[in-house]
Image (cartoon, rainbow, N blue to C red; front, side, top):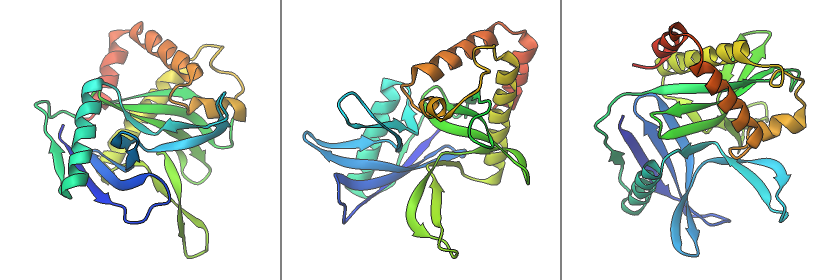
Length: 246
């Protein structure tokens, strides 16, 4: 899977942001709001993140990454490519020998949480990248659907309401249908495998930590679900493989 990065300079910024970048993960996903920041030791890359509306033991706001790398190699290659694109103003492509788009998902069911929220999960791409805070929702009009993580912009629509944009989103309808199918399949499997300690009433103070990349709760639940998946019959394994993007 080739990864394409395009960065641009931010002329006016109230913080340490010096540039913004987006990247395309093959033909499947686009990631935006990757930031090039000025630090004490020079430029560095900041992944898209959101506040968890709480502070740490030092009183500092706690953030969670929406998109991140999962291996040192992927982090090194991505950081180098983003900074190169920023410095040269040109598009940079990370080419790999493996052209496959291996996409899998893990979902934790949510019961009696925020209205319309059925589950919260993650999407893994080629064992190198992870997308967090994906939500399974339910609507009276459309039924169950996948909601990709978004952020509030400074823009207003025609009705004067805030405009929201997705941090990560499928590049076209075909990719959206395939990725949504993978996530929904993981959601259905997780409900079947959920044990009593996972399937309990979930309140706001539980939902927020589920979104945290470093949350112990979601890691334990996902690891527990993954362990149970490995213990299922081979037919279930084959079914999951068929849902992956070829």
